[in-house]
Amino acid sequence: MTSGSQVHRGSDSRIWLKQYPAGVPADIDATPYASLVELLEDSFAAFRSRKAFICMERSISYDDLDQMSLALAAYLQSKRLQKGARVALMMPNVLQHPVATVAVLRAGYAVVNVNPLYTPRELEYQLKDSGAEAIIVLDSYASVVQQVIARTAVRHVIVGSMIEGPSDKKMACELGAQVSEDLARRRARHDVAMNEWVAVVAAALIAALASLASSWLTARITWRAARAAHEATADDDLRRAGHAALTSRHATEASRRDAPGRSGASSREPLA
Image (cartoon, rainbow, N blue to C red; front, side, top):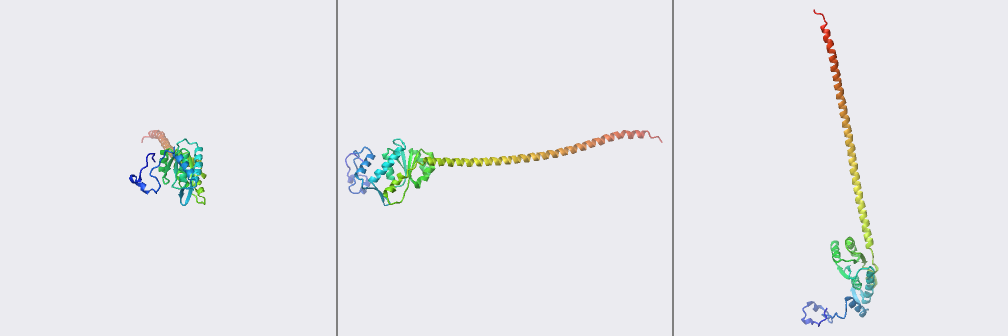
């Protein structure tokens, strides 16, 4: 865009201008419009009955785009996002994309385009880097959003769907019709899943501790039984040894008592 003098195509260094159809100017005067939204709304009024976008043999008019984007913009504003908030769009070049783009701009927010083929790691990085607080995504890619949303600043999720039907307007308006405040439900499911995981881990730990305690108790009982058996055997051996010692002592004492008698008797025998 330029507000200065027009540049002649023949002397312009922008080689892509050669591909412009006849009647399309190389530069435009943007001074009549205070914003891009004002330009869009002027186009809605000027070309209301014309086709604005065509995708896969379906189309929406400027009037359709005006009404649907206005409705979606009003919904976005109802979420109390601050002016200038980032809203991510995760979808390919389908009819829902221009509706969402215009809606975000009309609501006073900034568009953050996201490659729908991003991996969860890539999506998480872009959402964090951009500071997006809301995301509009086709259901085909919603599972990727679900994997990372808890680790981002995103608080509102709008899920659209590519549907077949006789109505072009219905196809494009499906994005607004399937508005879903499912972040709370997703996070609730995440919390439930986390609680279930904690419960499983806790149960496993309890089972492991119970098994360990059982093993320890079994080993303790076995050790005590072995010790008792050992002590019993030692007591028997001690008793036998004591009994043998006592028997030997008694025998010695008996022998000593008998020895003097035998000696005296011998001395009293007459001499031959």
